[in-house]
Amino acid sequence: MILLDILSKGESVNADRYCETLDWLRHAVRRKRPGLLRSGVVFQHDNVTPHTTKRTKEWLEHYRWDIIPHPALSPDLHPQTFIYLAPKAPHGRQKV
Image 1 (cartoon, rainbow, N blue to C red):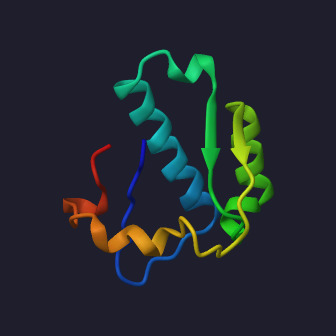
Image 2 (tube, rainbow, N blue to C red; image 1 turned 45 degrees about the horizontal axis):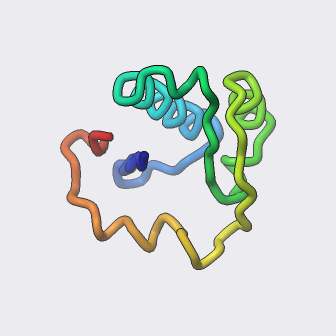
């Protein structure tokens, strides 16, 4: 499952915003794949600051999501690589 969250002009990602996006992803997974959250989630993100803060780590531990290690700004699977392939969504969010 891929979640695309487009920020408004001038907006940046911090730990609070990232955890909000993770909450939105969690609710989308619950709607689209009932039972998946009980069987476990394996999640991949890179190691940029909002992904490695104490708040984010606590969120991931609380929901027991396993993280696949991925180096920061790695050229493979880097989000900016794919952002131009997705249509722009109304209200800044892409349906999952």
